[in-house]
Image (cartoon, rainbow, N blue to C red):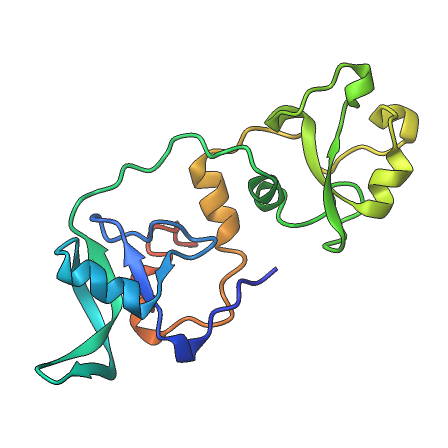
Length: 185
């Protein structure tokens, strides 16, 4: 799964005050209009610029390609329980067959058996596997998820988000992406 980014739109990468992206997936990007507005409202510092400029009769400015917030936004410790975040935790793959197509979510322990709609009981599943499993327990259906469902941390989701970079990354962004990833020996 890829988030489409149009290079012609000249988006600005948004960094927190510690120079880390606010999010990796989707990558924290603002339109050039929002970036300029934030500059004029004195909410961000411009870190890098595009060659392209915008002008008015009395003013000209190069468009920001990277901006950094002046005030640190403390990241949430626990990500929201959303369909998107379940898919991201499970790397946009059916937890039964590995397919990335027709994703929905499945209650590992069906609701009819007391299963709840929680991080610890919901996994990404393709429609065919979800229909095949139906309201059965995993052992009854002979369908065990690849990984047990769990409540991810923001760090878990950031790590998984790095596996799905946007279709376009401007060269000025590269110094600020993935610098907190552990280096391989």
